[in-house]
Length: 178
Image 1: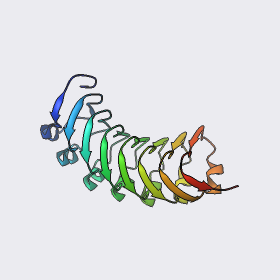
Image 2 (image 1 turned 30 degrees about the vertical axis):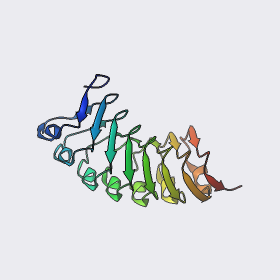
Image 3 (image 1 turned 180 degrees about the horizontal axis):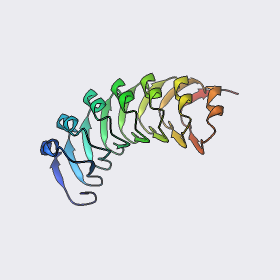
Image 4 (image 1 turned 45 degrees about the horizontal axis):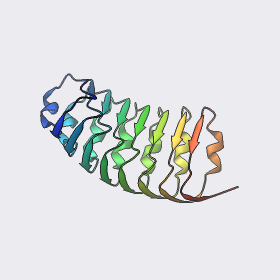
């Protein structure tokens, strides 16, 4: 755990050499640059938290190789680009934090394959399109926030079937429904 220190400079690619690492926490520093693709070699990783840095660039499709991940927290950076469809390969994921970035494009329907997801935060980005009905497969979902994006269309009525859902934030979009 290297969180909340005064780490500066580029995100060290050498983390990719720590093959037995199962927890990587460098949140609340001032790391810059991109998330190194070398992290794809850390197949035992269960948790990545790089939130609250100054990271830029896109989320690499190589993220899909980290199939042991249960927590992926990339929020509060300056990440750009579309969400890779390979996120759907993270079948053990329970927490996905993507909020407060500059992500664009639509939500990949492949995210609906992560049936273990309990917390999904993608608010305060530049995401657009409609809300995929595939997300109603998240039977364990507790909190979902897509607020402050550019989503449009109707709110899927199937969201009403999410029995464990305790928090749903969809404000500051152009959604409609009854």
